[in-house]
Length: 260
Length: 204
Image (cartoon, rainbow over all chains, first blue to last red; front, side, top):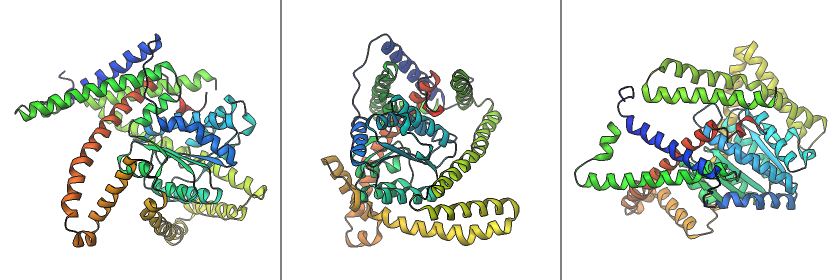
């Protein structure tokens, strides 16, 4: 334990315990012990959202936010890309056109590939066009101008914003509201959660984005991950309650653990 | 490139780099190498601009050639792109002039315009479909008024209410969400490490 930096020992133990529980639940799910997974209304609404766009003959607009794969927002972008693959497949199934505006250049080929695969899996490869992914530069303002202009001109039936969102989200969702789009949002970025919750028809709060990206696949190991995550939450909650009681009794357990 | 190389090599690279960075975080060993790796990531992303340029040119050239709606704007975009790209590499004063006298005023205009959206979003788009959304909206209005000096001058009671909302329910909820986010990050890390999460590599 001497190798570990001071103040990080408890953190490492929690990290390893979390990994262990997640792995155990993945293995259980692989052996057929499937957990009962809470449903995510936002994910269940994806089909309805795509079907609505197909019926109206309008686009489904998808955004992964301003985050990229090279920065600290990479996990949020990765989770959003996982859901994008499913949205592309649903769009292919119902015959809706999916549109994506890229603010990171390297996301262009990745998203093009995801959309192409989605349409192909749904049996409609001819619906795919590389123009469904538009690169608008690396700036928040150029992205905001391009997306708001697109939404107000083309009036997509559905606006989906999942990922690392910033200030542009407020305005893009505002434009979506003006266009009368069905809006689905979700972000682990705390500052933008209230806006997403107030303006969107369906939303994912905090870590639900990560869980939802596993839930869309319906793959047993992925579902095991969600169950494992919930178990760790209960353990952490128990530690917090015990810590609260002990701290009130004059023994600052949590504080000592954090300094260990 | 074969599917094996396309999926396996990036996943091996991801696993090696992330495990090393976690090791460095907990032990402090290899700090220099970790900083270097993070720098490489940023540098590599800069190289990817080329992909973006190609996508941008392709999109607008096609739009012009097909005479799609709004195609004259695509000509303006292409001219702006080519002029600023060449000026940035050939004549720095021209690039600085473009930046200070065209780009900056345009960006300020854009901010002024969307500022209106930002402040009117709740009136335009709030979907108060259930009690929780209505509650959130009501609290948002109280907090907005609490932040405005004029409102606090007329309604002094807003002071303690705003402080309490910020320090008690807001902080509690933020901490709970933070714990969830941390767990979500570990989950995503493990899923990627075990090869269940491959979407960031494109379609399968």
